[in-house]
Length: 267
Image (cartoon, rainbow, N blue to C red; front, side, top):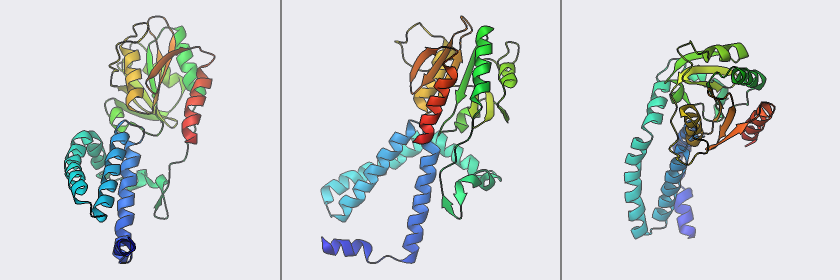
């Protein structure tokens, strides 16, 4: 066992250190791109199998090593198929001239760090929802957390404006072309409107919710975002988070949003 330790670590060149740093950066980039989505569980599972395969190979356990090696070989092909939208998104971002400038807040003297928390004007969002509920104006607002939903935002019209009550209400006004889709808010910016969301496949939802509610719930099943849904039929406000949907009173709306977003910031 001692000989194995020296075999693995004694011959460590400078280029090996650079190699390790680049691989760590690549893994972090993939993690940041996928975190907050269901795909992160698949990614972490494949990484775990790969690390176990390397340990088994170093211990010269040939049979188990061959089985895990075959799984890893097929796993990389499956990885490309499963993560095709994320890979496409990453390559499109990499080819953008402002890529480095856009992601500069996550770099500090050559080392990666986590993005700082941004203030969100929850009061304006809540007031807009309450106002639309009183007028029975249907609305679907998605507030991102770790995953910024770049691909989903591309399905709508790019807005990129500061959050304001008047703008939110105008986007969902019945005679505007964007009122049927979802508004995506990241940080304190309205990124896009009229976005298409995945619809939940649950069939046992109470109260037979409409398509707007099912889309908001589906978005929270596939990401870490939260969704606020205003019913056009009865003016009620619903809140979706982590695949669960519940009605919420006007008074508790701001408190619920603050709790959900603050708990994420602490993780």
